[in-house]
Image (cartoon, rainbow, N blue to C red; front, side, top):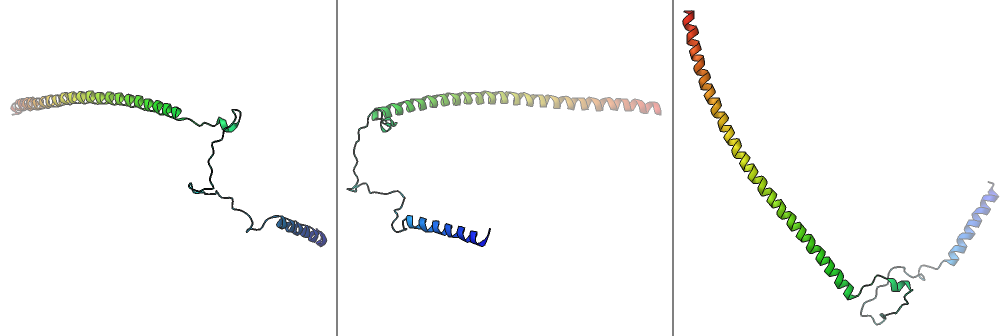
Length: 146
């Protein structure tokens, strides 16, 4: 680009900026876009019950009257009660299962102790008979060697 072209394009940009700044309102004039907060007791606030046609989208909003809300509350209460009953019955079933497993454990533990004592007695009697048999064999061998 030549100097004349770059300066002409720069001047056109500055002309655009000047035009946009002329069109744009100054900061002091512009209004804030934040929510407007009005005190509920304000006299400027008017609440009116507007009536809409059936075809109007505002009439199709999911507003509910007190009877609908009461029905929904009762349905929710019944559903919660049924869920509570189901959870209670499953809890009772778990308690019964725990008790049966505990009694089975106690029974098996008793049988285990009995088997341990039985095996211990067998081991002690086998040691006694093994030492008695060795003593008899040892004497026999010693008498032959002499």
